Image (cartoon, rainbow, N blue to C red; front, side, top):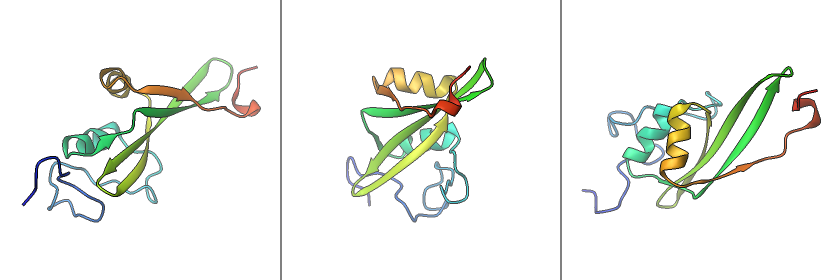
Amino acid sequence: MLSAGQPKFSPGQTKTEAPDCRHWCPQSQAIAPADVLLGHLRSGWQLSNRVLVEVHWFGRDRRTELFYFTLTAGSHRVCMPVLSNPVVLRLVEAHGLEAVRVQTTPEDKPV
């Protein structure tokens, strides 16, 4: 039985034990889909107040941002990288998270 405030999902549980969370493993999928992040939040995981944002440039005018969220559930901690998209941007704004850009290498910056 879960007590108030206890996450419904923790590392090592199977999908049948936590049906509202889609499975994600950082060893087999480097970047998590946004729905995995949302599923963890619905299951009681807590977001850190700070999210790291890494910018990757593809040529001069194209870029993508990778958000690194830190989630905790009890003594478990997970770093979840998620590509920028409208859901992620709304989540950052709604939770009042501090987005910190990490330094990119000179090769990643536009010319």
